[in-house]
Image (cartoon, helix red, strand yellow):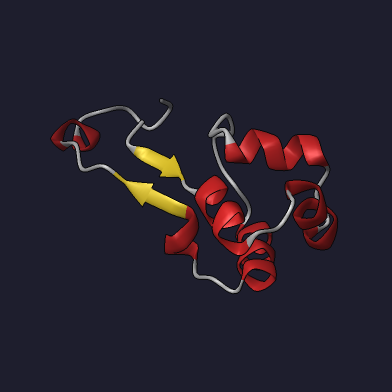
Length: 78
Protein backbone atom coordinates (compact mmCIF):
# COMPACT_ATOMS: atom_id res chain seq x y z
CA UNK A 1 0.00 0.00 0.00
CA UNK A 2 1.46 3.37 -0.94
CA UNK A 3 0.32 5.14 2.25
CA UNK A 4 3.14 4.97 4.76
CA UNK A 5 3.20 5.84 8.45
CA UNK A 6 6.12 8.16 9.23
CA UNK A 7 5.52 8.40 12.97
CA UNK A 8 8.86 6.80 13.85
CA UNK A 9 10.81 9.61 12.21
CA UNK A 10 8.79 12.19 14.11
CA UNK A 11 9.31 10.39 17.43
CA UNK A 12 13.06 10.40 16.84
CA UNK A 13 13.03 14.04 15.71
CA UNK A 14 11.14 15.09 18.86
CA UNK A 15 13.39 12.96 21.08
CA UNK A 16 10.54 11.29 22.94
CA UNK A 17 9.91 7.71 23.91
CA UNK A 18 7.09 5.80 22.24
CA UNK A 19 5.98 4.61 25.69
CA UNK A 20 5.55 8.21 26.86
CA UNK A 21 3.69 9.17 23.68
CA UNK A 22 1.32 6.22 24.01
CA UNK A 23 0.53 7.21 27.59
CA UNK A 24 -0.04 10.87 26.70
CA UNK A 25 -2.33 9.99 23.79
CA UNK A 26 -4.21 7.30 25.69
CA UNK A 27 -3.15 4.31 23.60
CA UNK A 28 -1.59 1.08 24.69
CA UNK A 29 2.01 0.59 23.66
CA UNK A 30 0.81 -2.29 21.48
CA UNK A 31 -1.71 -0.11 19.64
CA UNK A 32 0.90 2.58 19.03
CA UNK A 33 3.40 -0.03 17.84
CA UNK A 34 0.88 -1.45 15.37
CA UNK A 35 0.23 2.02 13.98
CA UNK A 36 3.95 2.80 13.78
CA UNK A 37 4.59 -0.38 11.82
CA UNK A 38 1.72 0.27 9.42
CA UNK A 39 -0.05 -2.93 10.42
CA UNK A 40 -3.41 -1.23 10.95
CA UNK A 41 -5.97 -0.61 8.23
CA UNK A 42 -7.15 2.67 9.67
CA UNK A 43 -6.95 5.16 12.48
CA UNK A 44 -9.70 7.21 14.08
CA UNK A 45 -9.55 10.92 13.42
CA UNK A 46 -9.69 11.52 17.18
CA UNK A 47 -6.58 9.37 17.69
CA UNK A 48 -4.83 11.14 14.83
CA UNK A 49 -5.75 14.50 16.37
CA UNK A 50 -4.40 13.43 19.77
CA UNK A 51 -1.13 12.29 18.19
CA UNK A 52 -0.83 15.62 16.39
CA UNK A 53 -1.55 17.56 19.58
CA UNK A 54 1.02 15.58 21.56
CA UNK A 55 3.69 15.90 18.87
CA UNK A 56 2.92 19.44 17.76
CA UNK A 57 2.46 18.36 14.16
CA UNK A 58 -0.11 17.99 11.39
CA UNK A 59 -1.60 14.73 10.03
CA UNK A 60 0.59 15.00 6.92
CA UNK A 61 3.63 14.79 9.18
CA UNK A 62 2.52 11.32 10.33
CA UNK A 63 1.53 9.88 6.96
CA UNK A 64 3.09 9.88 3.50
CA UNK A 65 1.83 8.72 0.13
CA UNK A 66 3.74 7.22 -2.80
CA UNK A 67 1.62 7.86 -5.89
CA UNK A 68 0.56 4.74 -7.76
CA UNK A 69 -1.90 4.93 -10.70
CA UNK A 70 -3.11 1.45 -9.77
CA UNK A 71 -4.70 2.93 -6.63
CA UNK A 72 -7.59 4.12 -8.78
CA UNK A 73 -8.32 0.61 -10.00
CA UNK A 74 -7.90 -1.45 -6.84
CA UNK A 75 -10.98 -2.58 -4.88
CA UNK A 76 -11.56 -0.75 -1.58
CA UNK A 77 -11.12 -3.87 0.56
CA UNK A 78 -7.37 -4.08 0.02
